Amino acid sequence: MDEERKRIMAEIQSKISASADESSSNPWRFKSAKEAFSNMDQYVRDSPASAKSAGLPSNPPPMPEPLPVQPGPISYVQFTDPQSGSFTVDVPRGWNVQGGLAHPMPGDRRIWMAVSSADGISIFCDPSFPQNLCHFPGQAEGQFARMAAGGQLLNLRPSAEVVADFYLKNFVSGHLGPLTPLQRRPRPEMVELLKSQFRQNGVQIGYRWQMNCLETIYQFMQGTQPRVLSLLSTTVFTGDYAMGMWATWDANVYLYIAPPHLAQRAEEVRYRMRASLQFTPRMMQIYQQDEAIITAQGQAANAAQWEWFRGREAAHQAQVAFGDAIVKNFWDQQQANDSMLRGWEHNQAVNDHLAQNFSDAIMDRQRLEDVSEGKSYEAPSGYNYYWRDQQTDKIYGTNTSDPPDLTRNYTQLKKL
Image 1: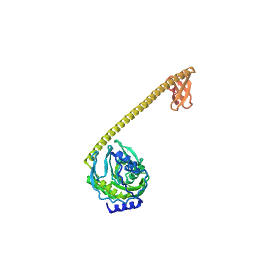
Image 2: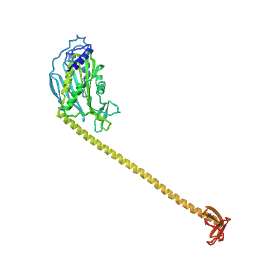
Image 3: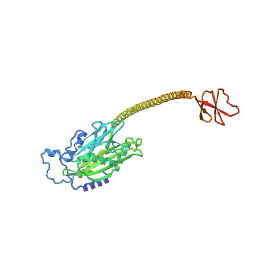
Image 4: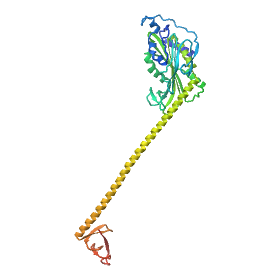
């Protein structure tokens, strides 16, 4: 533990007015991640189970505060994920240790740990909080977004501060009750640890990568005893938004709960656990299996999308063809109507001409037209040709095609 961390932990202890030792054994016993994190209320609020079973009153009189315990050096042993063998981590020898890999769906892999000591230290990596997240700018944060390839990811902005606030509000405060903030500070040494672990695993860190670590420290009361809660939130984001619309990123939360005088010891153990965490080849196999499933689901979703598009296109083409048929039928009907109208008009014209000729014959009258001037005239019927004297404007009839007088100017008229 470096001098800076020792100084900060000393400051935290000086802010807490009272400290107490939990002499009874840790009552938190569980067999699975679900049991571990669903019983937090009982652990942080109730008196130890051993005290209840001994028949002690539920509200015993306050005991004299013991002197802070100065624990000796901690020895560590390697813990291997008993469920899938996906990771190893160093844990204190003799402590109660549970852990494994929660894998609710392809692409959602959550390492979880619950480590506790007999003197009241508890260290967690909570599986109820997703470790693989997404970000859709402009969409509501704090909600799960369904992915096209299947599954769903929590939508949050890539930020260690956002992760800490979201986790404390939605996961911790409901279990522990009122929390008194003591300190919030960045942890650059944890960022360097993350970078070194990535490099050891052959991961090339790009210049756009964003890696952050933030520690938030609170005080709360467990019954009459003060406790320190330290939440360490880490985030890793490559800085890439697919098509400028969405991104995926990773986050982890590591917290400890401890009596104030054991906070420094809890920090040492948490740091050792985080620094010693190593993925095994089995984790890479799980990752590859997840990617294969996600790829297959993505291809199936893409094929289904294209099939949907083809169906929509076929429906559109059918609608277009139907519309074209309606339009064509309309114009065909219009042409038929126009033809009928022209036939009616022609018949009307013939009938009008016959009626006019009949009327003219009865009245011994011939209707004439000067085509050059567009004027109409009337003259007695009975002649084959009609002429207009251009000087006198009189009408003359002849039975031959010669004008009545070759010495004058005549205009031949058209019989109507």
